[in-house]
Every structure is written in C-alpha cells, then in structure tokens.
Image (tube, rainbow, N blue to C red; front, top):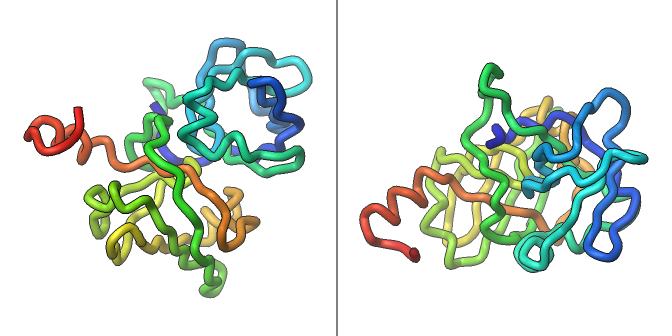
Length: 192
C-alpha cells in the first residue's frame, strides 16, 4: 500500500533482460523483498547492489510504461507505507490500471495545470475532485471529459516529482481510485 506522496526521484541505471536498476540517491534505505512504487508500479526489491534492482514480469511490461524507461530516465519512488506512518495522499496499491498520455503541462506561477488522457474504457473512474495516481503521484481529478482530465499541480509536487521534466506525449502510468473499482464490482456493474 502506498499513498501517492513521492519520496524521491531516482534515476534509471539500466533495463535489460526483465530487470530494472534504479539509483535512488543517498539515504533511500530498502531491503531485499520490500515493495517500492516506481512511477506508481509496485515492484519488489530483488537486489540492493549498486542501487535498487527489480525483476519485471511480462504483465508489468505489458500493462505499464516501465518497459519504455531508458538509462537516465527520472522515476518517482515511494516505499510502502508503514502501519505507524502518516497517510497524506490516497489509497494507492501500485497496481497500474492503464497507460495514459500527458497531453500538456502548463505552468501557472510556481505550479502547473497538467492535462492527461486515459483510455476511454476507464473514463467511468474519472470523477471531478476524485483521486488518481499518475506515475505514482496522488492527484485530484479536475474537469473530466471522456477519457481526458486535468490536475492542478502544486509547487511542492512539481518540485518533488518527475512531472516537471515530462513533456507532452509522454506515457504515464494510471491507477484509478480503488474505492470506485470496489463499489463498481460490489454493485455488479463492472468487470470481474
């Protein structure tokens, strides 16, 4: 379980043969077996030699944007929330639902307005003032229309994540609000 409050922006060292290596920088302590959200995708630490290494399943490569990472790519990192920790964002599982697109990032003072497009089959989960995780960042949906939506990005979030370095057309991992997905399933309205 994660919160969508990014702890650190790391840098991809390499991605090959189903394994990803990330340099998280100094002081980002992890042990083998721990869960870390990498751009919102829950991955298990396989090695801590020379940074963090993660094994990637075929499903992860298929359903996320992780397979498109290159050496030097900046990635959002968040360790799993501790039971005695603060919970500042929203419930994020690290189970990416879809890959969307950053349509635009318009600076507004020290913050920004980001516009995203999600696959249309997920539009039902886009609720005005609802929560969404975009590359692991907890954001509030504004003005959803079809599969498109906006999110106001406060200065701290812009500075503490990889979002400021992204450009229009970039792929982003999307995780829709788990509460909406559970409610839909319990009401028998959605896929099983």
